[in-house]
Image 1 (tube, one colour):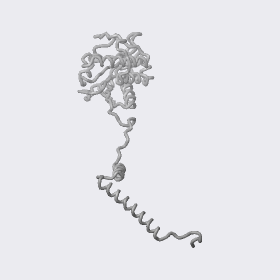
Image 2 (cartoon, rainbow, N blue to C red):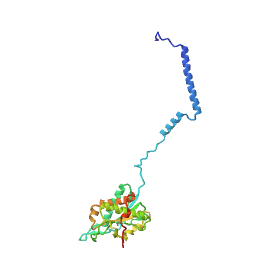
Image 3 (cartoon, rainbow, N blue to C red):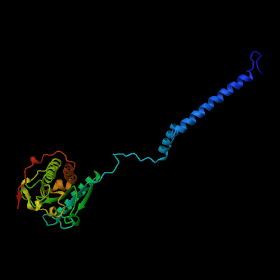
Image 4 (tube, rainbow, N blue to C red):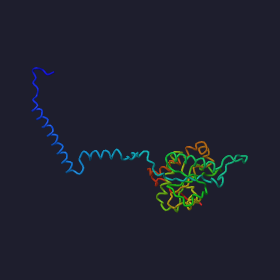
Amino acid sequence: MESKNERPTPRRNRNRSSNAFFSTLGVAILIATLFTAWTPTSLFASNLQEKLNVLLTPQPEPVNSLTTPQPQIHIGIVAGHMGNDSGAVCTDENGTVTLTEADVNLKIATLVQESLNARGFQVELLNEFDTRLNGYRAAALVSIHNDSCEYVNDEATGFKVAASLETRDANRAQRLTACMVDRYGQITGLTFHANSITADMTQYHAFSEIDPNTITAIIETGFLNLDRRILTEQTDVIAEGVTQGILCFINNESVLPDQFPLPTILP
C-alpha cells in the first residue's frame, strides 16, 4: 500500500529511465563489439588463455641439486696377491702359519672399498692379476701390499709408497704419492721409508697393464713383523689412512709434494 504522502512516479518518467538504461547498455555493447573487432584477441581472453595453458601444461619437477645423482668417480683397489698366492707368510716357532700377507691385504682393501663406496665413489676391488687391469681406466688405482714377516732390524717398521716411473703425468703421479704419504702417515703414525723402496714397487706389473692415463700407486702399509699389531688389530685405522690419501688426491686437497724426499730405489 502506498503512503498518502508519496506520489507515484509518472509513467512517462519511468519510460524515460528505461530508455536511458537500454541506451547505455546498447552503447556498452557496441563499444565492446568494436573493441573486439579491432583487437585480434581480446585482452581478457588472452589472459584467460594464458592461465589455461599454464594449468593444462605439465610442469617439470623442480631440480634439487642435492639429490640429483652425479656421475660416479671410478677408483680401483688391488688387494695384493689376492687370487694368485699368499704373499709373505708368517709362522710361529713350530712352523705353523699364523698370518699371510694376502689375508691382511684383502682385509685392508675391503675396508677401503667400503669407505669410498659410502662416500659416493664407484670402487672396484681387484685381484693381483685381474683381467680387468688390462686397459683399466679410473681416476686412481692403488695396490695394497705389506712387507716381510721376517725380523730385519729395529728399523724395519713403517710404510712405503711408490708410483710408476713411466706414467704420462708425472706431476699427478707425484701428487698421489705425496697425498698417500702425508695422510697415511698422519693417521697411522707410522714412518715413511723413502729409502727402502724397491724396483718391484716402481716397476709393479699393473703399472704397464692399465690405461696410461690412470694415475696409480702401490703402498706397503707396514711390516708384518714389527707392525703386526696395528695391521691386524687396528686395521680400520690402516684402511682410513689409505682412504684419506686417495681422497686427498681425488679432491685436490692441499699437500706439498716437495716436503717428502725422493725415494732411493733399491735393486
